[in-house]
Structures are given as structure tokens and as C-alpha cells.
Image 1: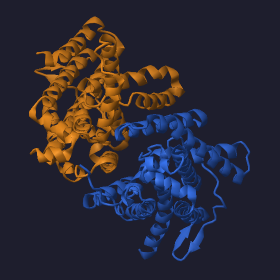
Image 2: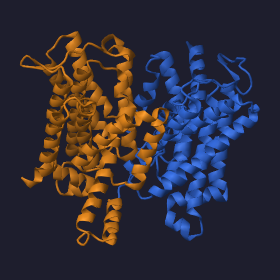
Image 3: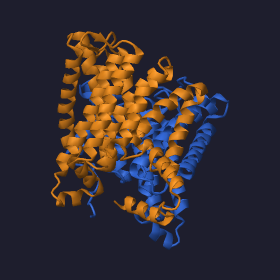
Length: 291
Length: 331
């Protein structure tokens, strides 16, 4: 029983890591522009599908991954340029519909390019299972956790220490004031969309070898990522990461110990329960209404 | 009765169409689907458009209504109309139960909670196959009949759904112009100010949520009997989004905007079928483009344009429109 739980924890942490990355993407865009990007899951799908497509075309493995990330980053730039920027000042509901439109559009594009087939991607470094204590993991699980930790530290450093990162934070606090001190607000928004898309693509590349990918693989992952971001408190990047890990672990434990059929429902039951007691997420600040 | 002028024109059009084109696929089949979606959109518009809330899980109530009718009539051979009432009662209870914790939330948190609720209900429909039929769904649902008169042709179904659809619009129009409608709009404008004026905002929001859920349940029951088959696919996240899109694309806080949105969003996939593989791409593109260029909604946009054309002189200047816009953004 105890061994089993360790195993569920290991799987949960690696799935949770991908939720954490998707949630991080949500948080970055939300922080910069106040938009909840429902096309975030599509970045994940596009990353995985581009890589699979490139590998199929004979591109060497590491290069294919790199090019896939670049492609998705460009998609992120275009999303901001052609969909979010022209709609400035639109209501929350309107921006939700715009990003949902974008996600359907991207799914439609993927359907045209790759068809309805389900693809699998070879793992980064083989499929030989490794025994760690009581848990058995494949090397890809370790890659997922390792790269997630690296990326999270990187993003933290980027926002805390670099000038561009601080400039993006400044834009999220007050766009007008940021513009007045000489920050190029448009460029910062563009950067944050690109960054968020790139993180989404990495999540897609990490998870593709252990879960199959297809043109509609992004939807559920996107919703789980949104749950992670909400669980952590919308707008808190590190909250989103913690939220993702918590969701992944609880989902894996729930699926293993309670019912595997309800695995996908688990995340949403948890989120409803948390919101019931803490309406602004685990690490969110209590919002104050200004009258 | 100038207040209901629009309603009479619309009702006349709904009644005339099948008389003029009794065998037209787009009137009797697609038309019936449109009228069904009108019930859903008009109901959700009360919650989103007028009360200023958001629900990304409304397909769940549509599903609960449909499955109540399907399960009760096939497994327990209950009278179809009674089953419909049981469905409405069930949705009344469920909506009241979830309203309490969910409606405390605002903005994105509310979106998340309703979304989660919708997905949980959908997964229950898939998993509890002993009574729901699981992913394969439930078939052989008997058709509705009224005093021995079977509703079994496309044209009769059109008539039946049209009746409920028009009733839904009438109820919605009357609510908006009633005391509770004014309370709703007050909550939308400023919840705090509404409270100060003595509006019980929690009760107002709960009531409108429950009412719009019951509209969806009614539509669900009709859908189950019309299709004679239900499966969880029809009640998923995608359909919740579709209903919200009808409301928003048509034009929020306008009953006929919601009607218009339901018409456009039901016709669109039917016409896009000719583009085959490009269908999804074009649909997503239209959704994005529509919201980017007409954030106030298609119906409101068009009526404003027509009005501006008719009274070019008396139309409000660009400046005052902009001023109004900023006011709306602030609220």
C-alpha cells in the first residue's frame, strides 16, 4: 500500500509538473495583460505536434525540439499581435471568447496540417524504467521534473532580476505609468505572450513521449493548467506552479486509490472545494472592491 | 403594446416560415435546432448579459434536463411531461445547491467554478453507465404526445419547440422589465450600490442563475425527445462555450441579441460544412474576428449601424459614444 502511494506520488509529480508549466503560462499572460488565455492548451499541443511533424520530416531530434519551441513562440507573438492587441478595452467575457476563438482556430489549423491521427513521440533518452526506492519511473519523468524545476527558477530569476522582467511587472501594475517612465508597453506584452507560448511548447514536448498527442490534446491540458493557476491564486506565478503540483499529485492519488474513471473530474472537485473555502485561491490575495 | 413589438414581429416570422417552406430542411430541421438554442441563449443571457455574471458550465443543466427525461421515460416509463417536470425540479434543486458556494465568486474564479461544475457533471454522465448508458448514450426515447396527438414529424417538432421558444422569450422580456429585472441590472451596474439601495443581491443572483438553469433543463428535455437519443458528447464543455458564444456574439443584455446569436451560431456550422476540413479554422476565425471588431455583439452592432443610417443627423456623435464606452468599461 505504502509502495503504491510512493508510485502515485512519483507519477503525480511528473504530471503535476506539466500542469504547473501550463499554469505558469496562464499566470504570465494574465499578469501582463489581464487576459485569461484559453488558447494556452493549444500552445502545448502545437509544441508536441510540431516536434512530431519535424521528426517525421527527418529533422535531428534536438533541432526538432528547438524549432518546435520557436514555431510556437511565433504563434504566441501573432496571438498577441492579431487577436489581443486590436481588442484592447474589450470586456472580460469578450476576451474569453476571443481566446476561445483563437484556440478553435489553432485546433482547426492543426487538424488541417496533421489530420485526426494520434501521434507518439520518442522519449528524450530511452524508455528503460528506473527504480528509485519503491517507485518505478521512466527517464522521461525525470526530464519533466528536472526541466520544470529549471524553467521555474529561470522564470523567477527573469521577473526578479532582469530589466525586461521587471519592465513586464511594471506594465502589469500600471500600463500608463510604465509607459511614462519609458517602458515600451506593447513590446513587453509581446514578450510575455512569446514567453508564455514557449513555456507551453516545452510542456508539450515534455509530456508528448509519455502521453500521445493529437490535434485536440490541448483542451484538457489547458483546462487543468487554468485550474492550477486558479488554485494558486490567479496572477501568482509561483502559486500556479504550486497549484499544478498539488493538482497532479491529488489527481494521481485519487485515480489510484478512489476511481480511475473519475481521474479528470478530480482536479475540478478539488478546485471547487478550495474555492468554496478560499474564494481567491490558495496563495491569492483577497480582492478588494473599489466602489 | 409597443414594448413587445419586436416580439410580435419575431413570432410572426417564426410562425410564417414553415407555412411558406414546409419541406425545407433549413426551416423544419435546422430551424427547430435554432429555436431550441434560442431557449438556451435567452436563458443564459439573463445571467450573463443582464446580471453581468459568467457561466462556462451551462451545458450541464441542459444535460441534466435531457437525461432526466431520457432515463425516466425509458427505464421507468414515466409520462414524458411528468419526466420533464421532474427534470425541472431536479435542476431547480441542483442549481440552488451549487449557486450558494459558486455565486460568491467573481470574474475568472466564477468562470473556473462553473466550468469545473460542467465538466464534473459530464464525467458523471460518462461514468455512471448503469443508468446513463455511459459514453454510448441512451436511445429509444419515446416522442412527446399531447392528448393522444403524437409529435412525430419534423414540422410538428418545429411547432412544439417554437411554442416553448417563444414562451421563453416572452418570459425573459417580461422579467427584464419587471422589478426583478431592474434589480438585476442594478447588480450588474454596481453590486455595492445595489446593496445600498436595499437589493438583496445574493438572492437576485441566485434566482437568475436558477431560472436560466431551468430554461436549459427545459431545452434539454425537448432535445432528448426530439432526437430520441442522448449521449454525454452533446453536453460537454464545447457546448457550454457555444451557448456563451451565442449570448456574447449576438449582443449581451439584449434578448433579441441572444436570439440573433443563436440563429447565427446554429446556421454557421451548417453552412461551413461545404468547406469540410476548413470548417473549424473558419469557425474559430469568425469567432475571433467578430469579438475583436464588434465587442458589443453582432446584433447591437447592426442595429446601431441601421439606426445611424436612418437618423444620420440625430445619431449620437462619435465623442459621446466613446464617453459611454469608457463609462461601461469602468463599471
